[in-house]
Amino acid sequence: MPVNRLRRLMGRHPVLVSWLALAIGMVLILLWAAEEAPLTGGQRAVLVVGCILLAGACARIIAWEPADISEPGPKGEHD
Image (cartoon, rainbow, N blue to C red; front, side):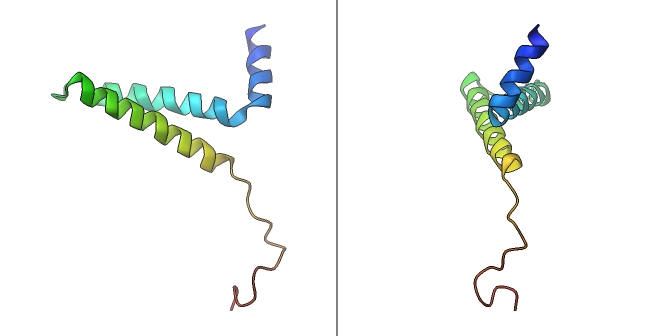
């Protein structure tokens, strides 16, 4: 049953699910890579928030629809 719920969620909110998956992966990699770095808790928190925001931007970029190249652009665009 959980697989069906996940498929429905992915069908309704693909960008949100992509954001969540990317954010989890990026934060795990960040924490693993910075494991021995002398960072304070606040510094780690800022990096985690930055990773989450970056994951959101990446998910939006991935979801962009390509422009229809059959339509001509403004005059002089392809000169």
